[in-house]
Amino acid sequence: MQFEMLQKEMIAAMKAKDKIKKDAVSSLIAAIKRVAIDEGVRDNIPEELVDRVILKEVKSLKEQVDTCPQERQDLLEEYTQKLQAVEAYAPKLMSEEEIIAFLKANCQELIDQKNKGMIMRTAMGQLKGKADGKLINQIVADLCK
Image (cartoon, rainbow, N blue to C red; front, side, top):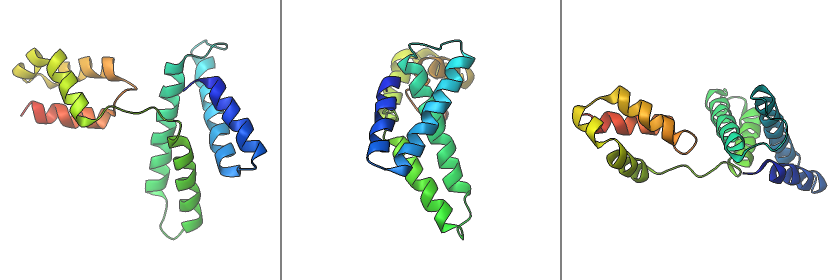
């Protein structure tokens, strides 16, 4: 996702008076700007950084939904709507089959040695932002059995 597209989406949400979408996109933009400044990139924010921040926001919103008390239905509904709005901008992650194919193509020797640490180091270096880390860990554990 390009940063400029997010800004246009926020303007469109403001014009449509869609408060939930505007708030979600606004918080994404703020988080992206914060990370970009921390990494020394003020102009021309790369797509990789935008995608990484969006995935991090999705993860934190999922935690909010999971930890929200059941008796607070109003908060739960708000968190769920915000999560759905942010997920619309999240990049598509690799499926389990794609991860297995990648690991077998790039780490077969390490799989044969059952060296989980080296497999994870290699896989996470190359798949960061493209696949879910928990899913990669689970797949690597299954392959090393």
